[in-house]
Image (cartoon, rainbow, N blue to C red; front, side):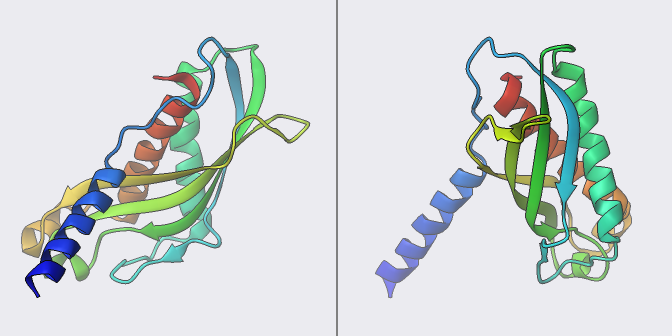
Length: 172
């Protein structure tokens, strides 16, 4: 029994360390890109147990596209190779509602990043799995008060994705 507990704890720590590993640049140094489009597809995203998911899928996609595009446009190179960034969400958890009363939680999502040359759909990178999180929310009544709503939670998760995509493409 003691061996099983140690094995489970070691596995959990290994999984947690994988979640917090920093994003590495996936492109070659010196490559310049101009991000001309960002597309997010949340239509097939599994809404996980415990998610107080009340946000319309189209609105979730709109928020993610806006937040990610703003971050990438701030660091891309105008006039460089035009690329399209696609993010296909596979899982989406947004903290909120009565579930925060049960304990502390963090909004999060998992998806696949694809970057293609605009107009040709030629992939520039291998499909890349990414995960993102929002801010940790306290449980109980304090947590209910601190959760600002589904749109804010989605914006925070999107900002995390934006940071990781920026690091993957531009190294910054």
